[in-house]
Image (cartoon, rainbow, N blue to C red):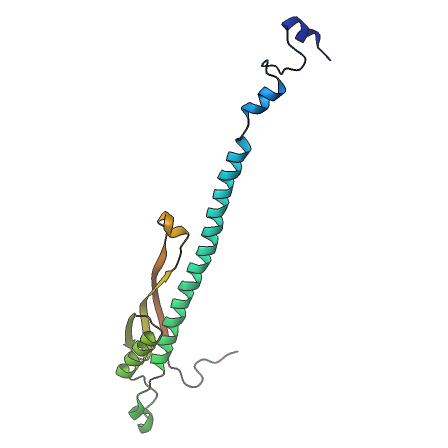
Length: 162
């Protein structure tokens, strides 16, 4: 139905306000949805890659932390046998502790720093990295070192629980 204003302005009933027919208007917007789908698809793929590879990086860091903690525990288990036999107490043998922790790191295929102070064995600077094939193409990679893991050899009741 033609409006009296459209008749006065000389507009055709099958044309829009810009004077284009329905077919001409549709051709002007052709491909807009395809571009939007392509952009959103690439964005979604990047987000999924970041989430997946971020999870893999967290798992790699946790694995390095586990190795450092186990190496420290292996070192803390090395008691001074002479002190135990003499009955003077349970002390960690610093040389054996450092060697046991280093051996554990080597056996796990890793490296790091080992120090012994009193009965505490500290393993630090254990490297970790995450294979990130998708994000590495963008120059994004996940790697680092574990700060420190400590272990002490304790015997008997240490504190009284209420």
